[in-house]
Length: 177
Image 1 (spheres, rainbow, N blue to C red):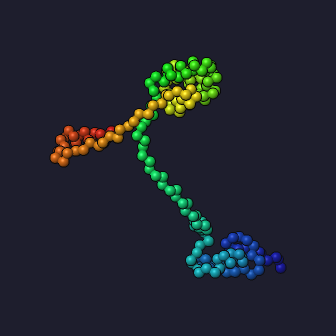
Image 2: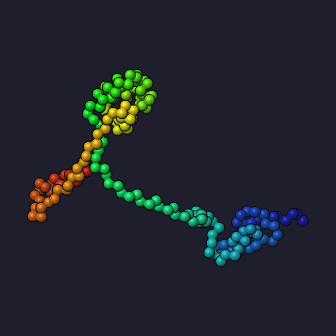
């Protein structure tokens, strides 16, 4: 007599030790190992499939992160900052008074030598950030605050009837935006 052919689990493919178990899966009788019997044998026939469905079982529920409190809406400031018109002259004179070279000043102020020269000679206007650096270093004024007057909305009289031209204008304005 030859050696008996080892029994193989019809679900996972493992060698079955002992007699094995017969279970029904989707109408078919299968010979399975102890592990697969533990896993699939106690379920009602026809209620499960050994084939993966593509969905992972949800194990952990992610806790919703608390939403940050909404920031209070701040009103826009009623002023804007503008660079003074004679900025170049003020910067140039401040550089002359300091008696230092552009190279020394560029290191101390934190601007490139090229930018410092361009501003001092009026080739370009400094940004607000650059102007603040220059103001702080030379103790001069380069930024002026311009007050903004809030504009009142134009009110339309109650007895006004729009003309065809008004309607055409309104449509054109809406299209441009």
